Image (cartoon, rainbow, N blue to C red; front, side):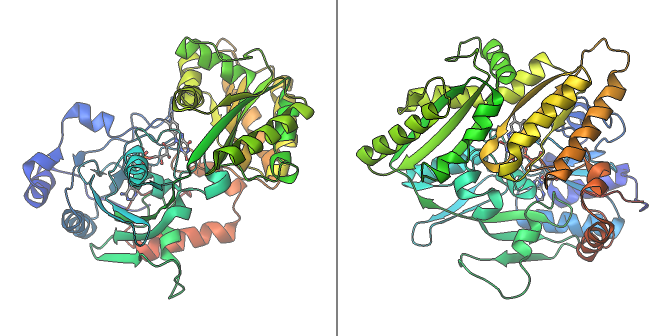
Length: 474
Ligand SMILES: Cc1cc2nc3c(=O)[nH]c(=O)nc-3n(C[C@H](O)[C@H](O)[C@H](O)COP(=O)(O)OP(=O)(O)OC[C@H]3O[C@@H](n4cnc5c(N)ncnc54)[C@H](O)[C@@H]3O)c2cc1C
């Protein structure tokens, strides 16, 4: 276990000298707020607290800060908007939390190269908007996009609603400016579309959860903005018919949709209560949202009619077409509110999973989840990015059960067994962080865990960058 230097008044004074008084805070409320993310009911609330929060304004600030922290062996935990769902931004070994909220400029939108260069503290939706204003598409679209920062998206390799067609955040990242643990600043990648000069460090840093380097600039790929977008809301009588239908969109419909999202009956009812509005066919067993894109209005109409007919031929109860801004926004507002709706009615500590399996295994996964929860007499909610095989499961046994803790553990273990058996893994997009660190060994073997530790120490020999994350550290 690495020994760290404590953050004393002298350290705080040094940080103020490096970054300016206005960029250093020991305000007790801020120390708490900047030590948490959105994990519900985490066990580390009291023990993992920032000693000081800093707000660098430019790359040089971050470089000087890293050099200082490295020389003094003080932990540095990067923080985006704090919307993470794995405790990634929680300062597990105390020390300095580095908030990137003041590094929030869109630096350049380059139409010739179809790129946008941004600082890590830009809110994801602002990039979507800046690209759309220029007639272009930034295809990253996590449900938290109105709040999350792009630096957090890159560090978690965030997924979201358009992964089926465009891939997760990492698919859009061409280059990263990074501050290494010793304060050196380097660019990995560039505006070029290909690059095999050396290792692919860009995509090693993507998803590295702030453990390898501090990301200070990002070059993202842009695409042409589709002229037409239509969302289909499709209720099915039960979960099985909905999940079994999904592969047919491609195999029989011959269309690669931008999104295929799944909401079970419980997630729909909770969202209706939370938003205080009805969704069509809300008594259905499950709903899919299928998003189609194109450029020609008539072609699009043909395509969505074909997919709609296919849905009905395979048991859909109805097909609702959202083809204007207003109806599409209402639909996505419901989808994007599910997480908060589940928390509102199932507060506190539950099992919240982000498992991912090969897409063909989703029907089996959902059957097994149903059987496991029934066996343990527990309620559950399921929704997620079904087109990617990525399911968000909330297991919420009755609060009054005396065996609640044991039941949660048993259900989680049973689900992990099933996921592993189906060729899936622990987390598809929310990351390991602190929350899943001790379960990583169920999915990665000893050779891989050893490599993770050695790569980490090659980048960060003093183990100051977001220590104690991703794999257990002795
Ligand atoms: C309602 C809701 C819906 C969500 N929906 C989705 C979804 O659809 N898809 C999805 O993938 N996730 C989703 N999430 C999870 C979360 O929004 C994402 O993980 C997001 O990428 C986190 O971004 P953030 O800016 O909040 O990062 P934070 O939570 O602040 O940090 C996340 C990680 O990034 C690291 N980090 C942050 N900035 C930097 C930097 N500049 N350099 C190095 N490391 C850095 C941190 O150390 C931490 O490990 C959702 C969360 C909520 C609350």
